[in-house]
Length: 131
Ligand code: AMP
Image (cartoon, rainbow, N blue to C red; front, side):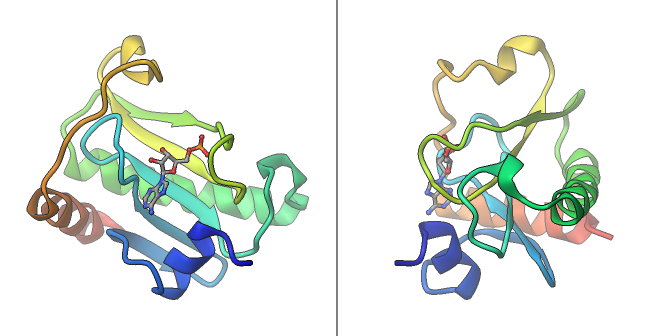
């Protein structure tokens, strides 16, 4: 059975899409730690990030860099934090989180509640900055 992220990539499940390339996809996290919290995933279904082959992992990082630059340009933040957890969804992914201080990366923090319109607006702003 396809993972939830594969179903997002095919469009079967809706998402706030940020960017797509041949082998990668980026979309807003539905339960964000900050406005602009984005997930970067390979289209290939592999559970654990560090089981990806070297080439795919390296190229995923370069794709994540471009997404992070777009987030930085669209969302007011000190920088974009990078996190890998992967305990909830068994499809490798990198969290990109706009942060202003170390504590913003604390998983125990309350999540940000956003309306559909707010998600749409943030996604459109980040997309417009993606080069
Ligand atoms: P983890 O596997 O622990 O890195 O967490 C998975 C992340 O995926 C969580 O931050 C969820 O909020 C996020 N997530 C789960 N389902 C969706 C979805 N349908 N759309 C966007 N983000 C999701």
